[in-house]
Structures are given as structure tokens and as C-alpha cells.
Length: 627
Image (cartoon, rainbow, N blue to C red; front, side, top):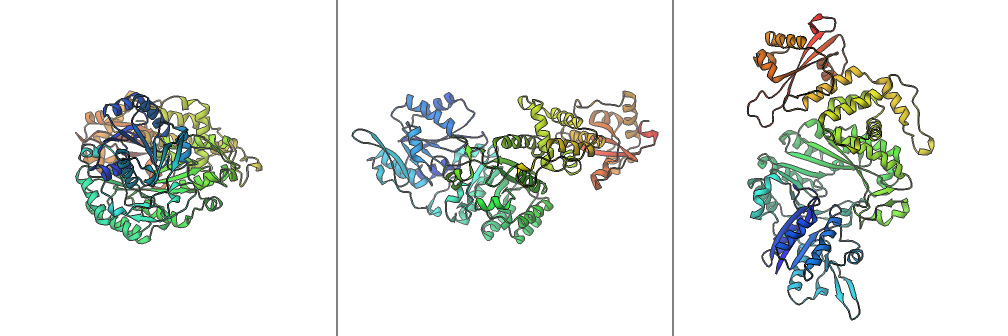
């Protein structure tokens, strides 16, 4: 019996761990192909490929990001292959099975929950006598005399993880390991009960055997894997287990990068100390779900979180300069209004994570929050991804505004295109980080930029257009009406006025120029601002840099660059303040100005050349600045 296991991944670089678990368990008994696609692939291409494999059974792994596209594929498959057996599995269809069987009439079976043993048993009955009532964990259709009835079997007991074969030993995966993400689990289950999360439904945590885990990881590294993402819901819940794996990865990483979901407020100090001392920079990434810092919200969703301990962990990890951190927020949780979410955002941004993911509550099937949606006045999308559209405290108008924050946050902060500029704006110009991203997001929307694409220089020029829009002097801060609830956030007018009063345009423009140059691996062909030096002045500076390089620094002089080489590799720009002092101490000193010199592509053959900035301080009154 030919079986095709399929899914539509969100991106090409993603891989499906679920399909490999199923094949590992049943591949010796049945002829199984894994067929992975993406949600962007033309449906005709997907159906044609599955058809060419001539399967008797097709199983689809279903998630909120692919269910609608998967249904379209199923509809077509049934028309061209009426005898095929179609099976669904995965978290999206493991709840409300009656709904899915009614909506997708082409589906024959749904595998609920852990699939290895259930799917294998189901295949034996499809091939054999069809005693589907004996397959625990399956929902199926049964033909009665006058109708077709949907039957839901009892769930299957939890599996013994140490009896499951490894899903990581398929030879056909080896050629692709270096270019795709490998998903890996060392445990199943979650100890917490957050009511917006599917992981809260399964009680208890089960672990795979440590030696088997190590052997699989080593096999993947030896076979060329470059990025392994651990899918454990709380990787660090068991300190000794996590510490042993951290130690193993440090000793055997060979350049592979590992990403974990951790709960920061339970991370033990001794583990943090160990990582700070022993972890090589760049091989670990932590994903930390903060979601909200509003205590009533966390209590409402049964989420336990010690904010002070979380801050300790994130700060200590950041100070180690070893591990990038990705912090998650969820807008739209119960008892969170616009103002309290503003506070949550500012609390978390203060930690300066390398990435701050702003998401919106999704009312997932099977979660407690979806069951109690009426209690909080939720309205949400009927179909995947079930994103909330509003509740009693956060109307749709607030959701729309916060989405603008998400948009510019992703383009600017998470992309790290102008960190020096953004930190200056959020710390010194705008009342708070959230206020900057909100005001800029509103301006972005009104300018119509969400409808057009952008290149790097567009991002800089659009931010500058927003800053030029700010008034040159501010009025007394205005506040929104008290009906907003809680401590009213600054009104849009108040934010703009406050920022206009504090904005030092020369400093911001200088930092933007510095960030722009640092964002290029190769010498930029153009600038987004009007270059003020004429050709003779520019040539004079180049000559001076070649003749008197020690004025810049001993490091610059050691490069021994000729004037011709500087013309080839350097860009220069004048800034009306001392940039080196600002970067070192945050002080704006105008008595000294700066000639910024950035060198590109000095290392011949380097695959990732990095710009090298140098700064020549010049007294503001000196004619040497203009030669």
C-alpha cells in the first residue's frame, strides 16, 4: 500500500518533524513518501505531484497556517482520485473533529493527538479488515443504512517516548540539511496552563532518552545541519537535563546554531553563569514568551510569571554577549487595553531584545480562552488563523493601530537597520518606545507606504520624512480622554509635540548616515540625502587621509592605504558633532565635529565583508574641517 505523507510548510526552509515521526514509526511496514510543499506553491503543482506518486493513502499534517490551502488541495485530490483514502492530523484538526468532518466531506479519517501509533494502527486497518472502531485516537465515517455517521473513538494513551524510532535518520534528508531548518524535540508536554496555548491541554512533561537525543543531534551535525530548532515548549523546565544538553552542544556544535524556547523566570542562576562562561558567541538563540507584563492579564489566563526574575535572566544573557534573544508579546489578551499593552511593550523593549515579536491573540481550537470567549466579549475570525478582532477592552480600532506598530517594528528594530538612530529616538526624543513606533506607524499608514515596496534607502528616507514632519517646538503634553481606561496614553498630538520639542535634527541625521553606511557590505553607490561636499573638498579630504592617516587612528594608519585605494574603498561624510564621544558616552559634543570614514571590501575574497568605520575629530571652529 502506497502512502504519501504531506504538509504545506509556511516557508521552503521549514521542514516537518511530524511527517518524519510518522514515517519512522511506519516506514518499515508501508511504502511511505514524504511530500513537502509551501503555502505559496500553486495548488495545481501540489496536486499534480501527489497524483504522480500514485498513492493509495494521503495524510496531511494540518496547522493554522496551512489548513485553508490544504483543504483546497484535498478538494481537488478527491475529484481526480475518488478511491484514495484521505487522512488529516495535527493540532488544527485534533479538536472539534465533528466540525472538520462536516466541513471537509472529502476527508475519511482524522488522527487526533500523538500520531505515531494511531496512524500505524489506522494504516493496518485500511489495508486489512477495516475495523476502525478499534483504532483509539481516530475519528472516521461509517456508512449506515440510510446515512453516513461520524464516529469519534476514545483517545489513545500517551506513548512511551523511548519506544519511538528516530525521525532524523533518513538518507534522503541529508542533501538538504544545510539549507533548511531542522526541528528537534527532546520532550513532549508543558508544565504550564496558559489558556491561550494548546500546550496547556496536555498534562505533564515526558522526555526522550538522553543518549538517543545526543546521538541524533551528533548525526545531524555530522550530516551538515546548520540550524536546529528545539520545539520543546519549555526547554529549561528540568535544569539538569537542559544543562547537560547545553554542555553537549557547546562541545560538539561545529558551527551549528541552536534555538530554544525557554521560560526565563525559572532559569537558574547557575545555568546562566555556565552559559556566560562557556557558550561560544552566536551558537545559541533563546525565544522567550513574555506575552504581557500586566498582572491581571496573566492571572486571567492562568499564566505564572515572575517579572523581576525574567528581567534578571534576559539582562544577564544580554550582558554575556553570547546569545541572541527573541521576546514575544501578544496583543489582545483578557484585561489588556491599549494603555496597558503600551506599558507591556515599553517594559519589554526596555530589555533591548535582539528581536521583539509583536503578535495578536489567536483563539485556537481546544484552548480554554476560546471556550470562554463570550466572558471577555471576544469577536474573532471564523477561520484560521482565528485572530481576535476585538473584545470588551480592546476594540478593533485599537487592534488596527497596534498593527501599525507591528509593521514598523518589524521593518526597523527587528531588521536592525538603524539601531543607533532608533535608540536615540526612543530614549531621548519620544515619550516612550511604543509612542515612537505608534506615531511612525500612523504616519507610514497615512502616507500610503504600506501599499508599496521598499529598498534600504527608502526606509531611511521615509523615517527622515516622518522626523521632518515633527513640529520644531512642542506644546504642553496632551492626554487622551479618561474613558480610555487606566493611565491614559499620550494622544497622537501630544506625542508629536513632545518629540518635536526634543528632536535634535543634526544629531539624528548624523546617526542615520552612520547607520546607513554600516548597513552595506559593499561601498554604496548612492545616498538618500543630498551630499554636501563638492568634488574639490572631497578630494582634499582623501589626500589628507592618505598623507596623514595617524590623525585618524593608529589602526587606520596601519592599513597603509594610498589615495587611490581610499578612492576605491572609502566613503566620507561630515557630521556636526563628535560621533565617537556620542557612541562611547551618549554625550552630544558640538565643539568637535567628525569626519566619518567608512572602508569597504578591504579583504579580498571575503564572502561577508563588513564595513569598517573610522572617525577623525575636528575642532568645530577649525577651518580644517572645510579645508
